[in-house]
Each structure stands twice: as C-alpha cells, then as structure tokens.
Length: 256
Length: 254
Ligand SMILES: Nc1ncnc2c1ncn2[C@@H]1O[C@H](COP(=O)(O)OP(=O)(O)OP(=O)(O)O)[C@@H](O)[C@H]1O
Ligand SMILES: [Mg+2]
Image 1 (cartoon, rainbow over the protein chains, first blue to last red):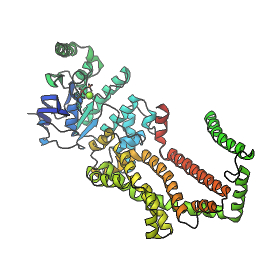
Image 2 (cartoon, chains in turn blue, yellow):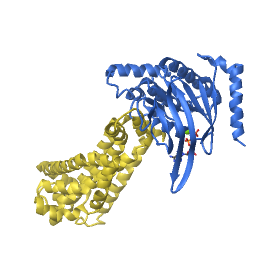
Image 3 (cartoon, rainbow over the protein chains, first blue to last red):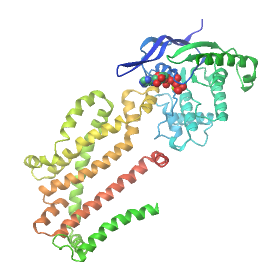
Image 4 (tube, rainbow over the protein chains, first blue to last red):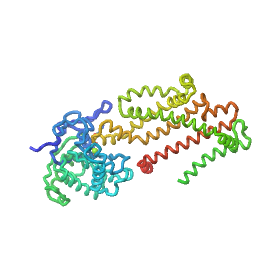
C-alpha cells in the first residue's frame, strides 16, 4: 500500500456571514500519494481555492480532518509550498530576492548560495535577465513565474498550486507545463494542482478529481494512466481523448 | 513635468503678487500688512545680526527632538497595535481618548511642570503628535494586504518575522507618509508652545514682535516657518523616492 502524503477525510467548510452560512465544501474525501501529481478540476466557485487554503493551513476546516503524513494540519508550514491564484510577490523585493526569500529560514546555505539558487530557478522559469526587476515592472505572467520559482526553490514535500498558469499566454503556458512536469519528476514532490483547464489537468496529473459546485463536492475521480515522461504528443493520443471525453461529459452533466 | 512646475509656481506668484499690489498701492496700512520690501529689509537685518539663524536653529532643534521622541515611541507601539489584537485592545481606547484632549490646553500645566525649558516644548509636541502617530501607524499596518502576510506564513516565518519582514516592510511607505504628516503637525505645536513661553525661537520672535507692532517681523517669521516646512516636506518625499524605488512604477500605472 502506497504511502499517503495527504489525506482529507469528510472535510466540510462553511463560511458564515451575519448569521447566514454558506456551505463551500461538502464532505470532501481525497488523498495524494507520495510523489503523486493530483489535480482538482471544476467550475469557478466550486471551492478549489478554499480546499487548497485548508491544506495550506491558512484556514481551518469546519468539520472533518486533513492529515499531512498522518499529522493533522493546524498551521502553515515549510513542508508545503503554495503558488497562489493571484500574484503574491513582495513588491519591495527584486525578482531574485523574492525567490531567495523562500530560503530565509534555511540556515544551511550561505547568502551567496541562496542568491545563486534564486538565479538558477529564475532561469528555469525563463526569467534570465529579469533578476533585478521589481514586481511592479513585470507583467502578470512574469510575476506568476517568479512565484513558481519561489515555490520550487525550497523543495517542499507537497506543492499546492492554485491555477498558476491562468495569466499566461498559450505558448508560455505550454512551456510552464513542461517545466513543471520536468521539475517534479526530478524533485519528486507531491503536487496538488488546481485548474479549470481539462487538457492541462490530464496532461500533468496522475489523478484528477473533478468537482461540482453548490455545494463543492468531489464528483468524480479519474486515474490518468498515460505513460511518463509525457510530451505534448500525448495530447493527441486516443487515451488522452478518452479521458478528456470522460471529464467533459461529467462537467456537462453538472450543468443540468 | 515642466508644465506642472509652471502651474505650481504661478500659484505662489499669484499670492505674492496680490500681497505686493495691496501693500505698495497703499490699499492696506503698513501697520497691518507690511510691504515685501519691509519684510526683506527685516530679513537682512536679522541675517546680519544672526538672530534669524539662531531662532531657526533653536526651533529646529526643539521640533526635531519632539518629533524623534514621539516617533521612537509611536513606531513600536503603533506597529504592535496594528499587528496584535491584544495590544490593540489595550491601547486603542486609551490612545483614542487621549488624542482628543487638546495638547494646547496642557500648556499651562506643562509650564508648571517643566518651566519654560526646552523640555516643555518637547512635551507639548509629544502630546500633540504622539497619540495621533500611534493610531495612524497602527492603521498603516492594519491595511497591509492579507495576501502578502499569507506568503510569509506559508514560508514558515514566525510571528515576529511576519511583523518585521512582511508587515512592517509593506507598511513602511505609508508609515513614512504618516511621519511626514506628523512632522507638519509638530511645527504647529512647536510654534504654539513658543508663542506662549519661550525666550528664543521663531514662535517667540513672532510673539515679541506683536508687542512692538512690528508686523514685518511677524510676516517674516511666518514666511520662514512656511519655507522650512516646505523644504523639509520636499526632503521627506525625496527620501521616499530613494527608499522606495519599487513604488514608483506602481504609482504611475495606477
Ligand atoms: N472567505 C470567504 N467568505 C465567504 N465565502 C467565501 C470565502 N472564500 C470563498 N467563499 C465562497 O466559497 C465558494 C468557493 O470559492 P473558491 O474561491 O474556493 O472557488 P474556486 O473553485 O477557487 O473558484 P475559481 O475557479 O473562480 O477560483 C465561492 O462561492 C465563494 O464565494
Ligand atoms: Mg480559486
């Protein structure tokens, strides 16, 4: 039996506002295995970000529990890295300092090593030459790539990414997908990846949870048995299209 | 840019022009409002005998001390208030109450306590600006975006590091603006304190001039205070540009 990095058991999240309460997540069960890449796919407002924030430890569950390596999550920590849906750089730091900021708590590396690592990861996300730019001088897509570099640089066991490529153009998006595939096969972290792009979910994942909205539920779980490593060719294969059809049918059925 | 400068200059010129017209034409009695020439002559006299610089030095020293004293205490307390609900609960009612007590009304008491010494000036400035500064700095910290704080949390920073490396850093430009505002208020309180009880300083000079009805000295004093205020204000915004280069572009694009 494979080791589980993360297990969510009957997780309920309710938001209350002035005596009115809103059920955002309704008894969510999911798990992420060691080194596994899992995607959450679903329509806008189905609670993907909410679930991710619970796993990140930024919000508390209303009911149920989330276990990270058998430990209940109580607060954020460096064992989980987060790429937020909106830009989340520190505006007063240069691009490379934003990346190096993630290594602040790392006492084993010298300042110089941290800087080199930051430069290396910026190059990896295609931002060579922009090391000294301030976030305000970068486009939305560039800022998001810095945020990805920041999440990669300290190698957390579990990476949480909330629609990280939403702001990127199609070409950059493809490049970043391949980069993520490459880096994660190397770093062997587990990933919880939020997206509403069906192709992206299938292409990147070992498993996809399809969610439905109002209230947020897991509607379907699909194991993606495409050989790894993958390249873009796989997106034209029969199996890929079979998965795509399955997911689209599920999403379509929710509209009724 | 050049156009804007021209507009700024024309505003000032307009006021001075009006002043020149009403005084030189004799429309207003020189006893009530002196001509620019009289004020310039007075300035030359005070420059020659050194009183002007001595007054400026005296007043500047007092205001600087009062300002620094207020800032040194207001900064940590304000930041703590803006970041911890316990500190906030303790300080907010207290500070909120005291800041509405008029500092000026404390002048008689302050003279009783400190005489007419510099300490008394520091005290009045402190009383006038410290509590305002605390509230404003706390607000500067409270308005830091939650999202940058959450970045710090997910990177494993502890509470102290969140305050020091995230909230304080993020709030610094607005805290700087607060200090700039506070500095302006400190001037007012200083002059008020000097008007009532002092034997030197710009406020004292104005007060003394009133006794002899030498309006040119009064106008000179007011102008000098205005110019000093303007210069320090420009210094504040110049330093902000150097300290917060990352803020520039955001401002332009907004
Ligand atoms: N702090 C909050 N208070 C109240 N309601 C909230 C809060 N956060 C989220 N919600 C509600 O919970 C639901 C799920 O929101 P969430 O942001 O998780 O959706 P999402 O799946 O990430 O959508 P998107 O794809 O648009 O990002 C929404 O209806 C939202 O209004
Ligand atoms: Mg979302």
